[in-house]
Image 1 (cartoon, helix red, strand yellow):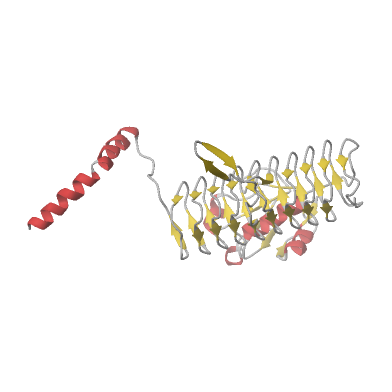
Image 2 (cartoon, one colour):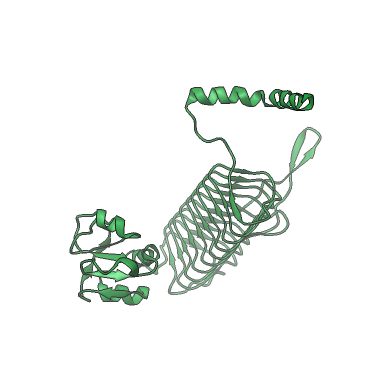
Amino acid sequence: MLTLSYIAKQTGTQFVGDPNTQVLRASSINSSAENTICFALTEQFLKKNPPHPQSVVIVKPSFCENISEPYLISDTPELTFAKVLALLHPLVSNQQIHPSAIVDDSVIIDPTHSIGAQVFIGKGVKLGKNVVIGVGCVIEDNVSIGEGSYLHSRVTVCKQSEVGEHCILHPGVVVGSDGFGLARDKDRWVKLPQVGRAIIKNNVEIGANTTIDRGALDDTIIHDGVKLDNQIQIAHNVEIGENTAMAACVGVAGSAKIGKNCQISGAAVVLGHLTVADNVIVTAMSLVTKSIKKAGVYSSGTPLLENAAWHKSNVRYKNLDDLAKAIKELQNNQ
């Protein structure tokens, strides 16, 4: 349970109402439950969806005058709401080592560590304070994991990889597996050993079942503040700039370089050896086939049509060359 005054202090906001108002959980604005907290981005939305009178609403200064107490005033209600959620649902650890965990003797265990059941930690692993390693994780030799990082169940961090401070790795994440490096020998493929590392910097969050390959020679690097959704593939030698976010099912091919503060939407693909500038937005299911050199919003692909209309359009696509030639001939004959 939190109080209104405590939340205001922790989030750096101003409160109006009884400072001892209790907040038990977060909710949507149209919830009928008492003692909850919600947020509104516009005055019009708030009027259409009045919150429960015994709940706290987070609002902007521009439309707080006609609101019933209690409420919080914030220039960024959604951001404040995120901070409140973190207060209500902190990542917790039991600060103990499960007896079934296998930890190499070379690993220094701190009293603040929490290591779950069936965990394996190899030789030379370095763990910062307050690290949590969930059930069934595998931490291979010579890995380092920074202070305050939280690995949920079944995460694998392969040899020599680095995970920075205050990172969150969700179930099934794999960091540092071999990249897809092959050489052709006549009619067969020969594996190219992948000898680089995978480096995850600070405050990175990686969604469930996302895979990040180690570098072939140089390192794969995920910079500070990057947020990756579920089921993303990051290939060898990729570099992702600070505070870039990627939605589910994105694929980034080998040696691509993604800039800072980019947004790569769901199921988009970036081909290998390309560079994407800072502050680029790539919309869903786009295929990036050449480098993007300046900030902006980029799209590709065919939007959804009714099936019959799509088939008609597909026939026309096949005739585009003939149509272009016909138009050119008409222009030349004018």
